[in-house]
Image (tube, rainbow, N blue to C red; front, side, top):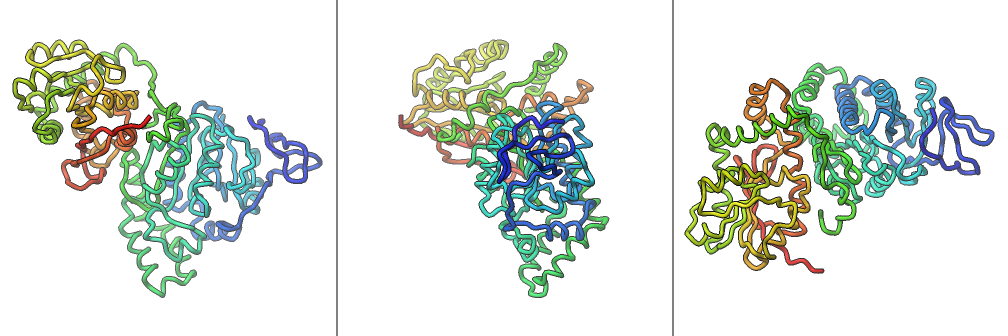
Amino acid sequence: MMLPFDLPPPVGYSVSPKWDGQNFVFGDQITPVLEYSENFAGWSDDLTALHEEAAGESHPIDRASRNDAVAQVKKLMPSAQAVIMEIGCSSGFLIRDLTKSFPEAVIVGADVVKEPLYRLAKSLPGVPLIRFDLLQCPLPDQSIDVLIMLNVLEHIEDDVVALQKAFNLLKPGGALVIEVPAGPNLYDAYDAELHHFRRYSTSELHNKLTKVGFIVRRKSHLGFVLFPAFAAVKLLNKWSPFRKNKAVVRKQAASTSGNSLVKLALEFESKRLPNFQLPFGIRALAVAVKDGRCNYYGDRRDGVKNRANKWPKTFPPLSPEKITINDDFVLYWHEVLPKKYSIVDGFNHNYVVKAASQEFTRTLEIGAGNGEHLKYERLNERQKENYFAVDIRENMVAELRNQYPEIRAVVGDCQKRMNFEDGYFDRILAIHVLEHLPDLPAAVREMHRLCDKNRGLLSIVIPCEGSLAYSVARKISAQRIFEARYKQSYSWFIEREHINLPHEIFEELSPYFSLTASTYFPIPLKVEFCNLCIGATFKPNRLTA
């Protein structure tokens, strides 16, 4: 196997190393590990030995971590022959899993430590292993398809520079699978002993990823079920002088390695909650992509260049059978929702009615569907005459005209320029629409163009897609109905329907609109994991040229 990218010469050499399938060859050197640089500020050979002694290969959370990483890589692989690199491969436990799961891929291991890499080379010959400090990354840009960094970033003092280096390593459309210790307030003697510079919140990780140009496609946690007990132990470590002894802290990792309750909790989480966006846990998880090859799940104006290639999101064509099913279920669900789930449907429609100013004149409702929302409006004659209901589907618009002849039903695509003057509307509504749009930025720009900059408002309602509450609710409602009706998996349908997550929608809106109010349903806490829907109202920003 040849590496599909060129390697720079190590210090003191003028020729590029070549991988012959067993060793790197350059000049008069033949070595299984190619060495470029070292950095002992955040890790060492001794810490690798400590981890192996205390936890080994079979610690439940590390097994769960590796299994999750492999599952994410399977979703992200552009081809069977993709280049996958693990940075921080240490003892090689994940490298072994990757070689088994992806036999045709080019698997590369990298770490800053020396002895563990040479041991791994003996036990797993045939895998190219490279020693380098990520802050001094010697590898060529755009050489890796999928990069994995599990419990690495917390060991690097300048983590933003490290993420920038990781971003540079990836090919356009490449993906980073990353895991870090969660809970900044839980940093204790154990973290210090392991040379952790920090623990992370998901928001901090997300912000640092997006700062260097990544598009975050997944945010979740590992160890959700165990977190209360874990947090209690960590707080005791911080507050009890007896628990700051390193020998005591070291024993904590070993004590949980064979714990059957820990194992059962993590097995439950991996089997029952793998697709949920878990709001807290022992470790924070993320998948981030460069540019946007992946419609894996999922701009600020100064970041448009980095995000532009993400849009529009595209999907493989459906078979004729699935097209029929798709169209049938959309219509059927519009009938079922107000009847069976009227409380949720009531929030969806009442929120935008309550958010309206008293003096509005012209309304634009995008994605109006069959006109369900109009049942909730209390319009005077002038407001009816100036109510424009837009939908891309001609059959829906025909039904709207039949049911509501007093309003103006229009066939149109909000992702393209519509035939209205700039600033024509003082009220724009998007009720469960924005999560569906492949070219969301284009729709945001068009809504901004059409919204009156002096007194206009944009009111939206979106689902808490990916949250624990929403995922559970969907399993017992739409998913159950779909699978009973069509006798097939619901996943292909919803993956093409809810393609934009809440954070993506708010990020796209933020350069053009300012948030003035929001309501989370059904629990009035502004967190997604325990809620089903978000209602939000915005005023348009005045953009400078």
